[in-house]
Image 1 (cartoon, rainbow over the protein chains, first blue to last red):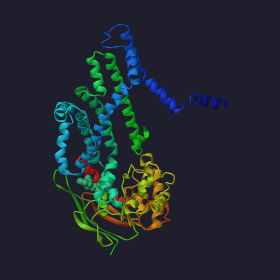
Image 2: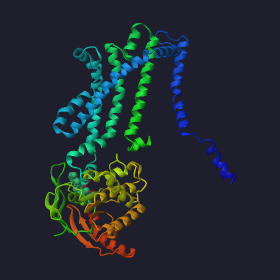
Image 3: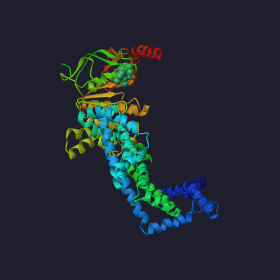
Image 4: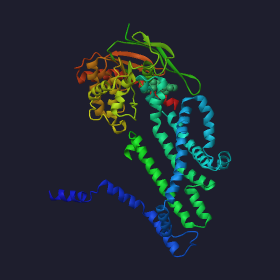
Length: 274
Length: 259
Ligand SMILES: Nc1ncnc2c1ncn2[C@@H]1O[C@H](COP(=O)(O)OP(=O)(O)O)[C@@H](O)[C@H]1O
Ligand SMILES: [Mg+2]
């Protein structure tokens, strides 16, 4: 009796709610980051680097806070997001359609597959001067650049997902009365959803990166030009505040993407476990 | 005229080397309505191939398969099939899977729900309607596959080693349930297995196949009623196994010489 209680007691005492546990886990995982940040602050305070090259973290945070309060950073984040997400959704629509078309049609596959293979390894951003030449310096070339970059991984993920369908699943549908012409949308695309979504997930941070780089190249508004402009005026605190803003934006994007993935792929073993 | 006629069927594939490979040859078999027939034979003897041809998933190279006098051209809901690895739709719930064929048939929603529920209950999956297949055990997934097939009310059930992936206990229970279902509905069943005891327990006739190419070696009437004793089943199974043994040994030797 006594023994049973004793055995049970520690387990009971340490029973933490899952939410608290998750929080503790996150806290634990952020220790290396905190160490890095502390080192940053210490090194700059100790005068070991030129402050112009690396301002102390505390001063960067002050700038970040000030520019957030007065709306500067939010404005640039929105600007960048509009560019990145417009291009991204354009790429998502085009990529899924092109990838699906490649899976369905042999002539389309014949035409498009070598182009995708060719485009896959090259740095798409190197086309930016051409895009500026063609589309000017406004938002359009940035959006198209993002789309051009993101359409490649989305197309190839959709195509590969649609091609890798298990023939027995197709046969099941046929024997349950589905006509061949309807198989693609009723069976192939839902079955390919995990791969399609993986492609979309891979492309999302790329959209942000390309969006920011195009802003650095063409000016206008947005986080990229916010940072480049700061550097031109030798304002390194603002440049680092821009990096912070980028980091926050990127984390929020990825978090949203993860939530959407879990929702859409509720049926998937991996999503269900995660 | 028999219900399901398989007439001098041959299937050959073209191999990677470009030579024809004969998977099954000279298959002649007639199956009566309401009959439960099993196919046994060494692996690679063409059991699945034959089932897939009856299902209309792959065409015969020669010969013909007729259901009720009509040549099989393509798959259809009159011939339900359960594949060895279930082939459920993983993005649909249990209910979604079982309703699938009913949706395709255009059955109104309320009626569809009710029909699907009846089959879900029948295979003992009440309470799991909203679960996704990835959350279910192998035995439960197999039940979903069976319910999905039965919901379309096919006149022929094609089952390809449906219990092959199950553990021994689950398999035994599923065998008993399948036999009960068959007694209840009296459908025509073509059942592929490599387990002779399972074949004897379930079926009225057992087709023994030989390999390379797959041919019918013998057709054995089991003649066992539903109340057959364990001893009787074992005795029949042993006899059948004696017949099959040589074939299996020969198939294994052929595998080895190929490797
Ligand atoms: N699509 C295919 N292409 C080429 N060979 C095949 C194909 N499907 C089956 N086969 C061959 O046909 C033979 C019979 O296969 P199968 O019907 O699956 O045998 P079983 O189900 O009895 O194990 C095997 O040798 C197999 O390799
Ligand atoms: Mg097989």
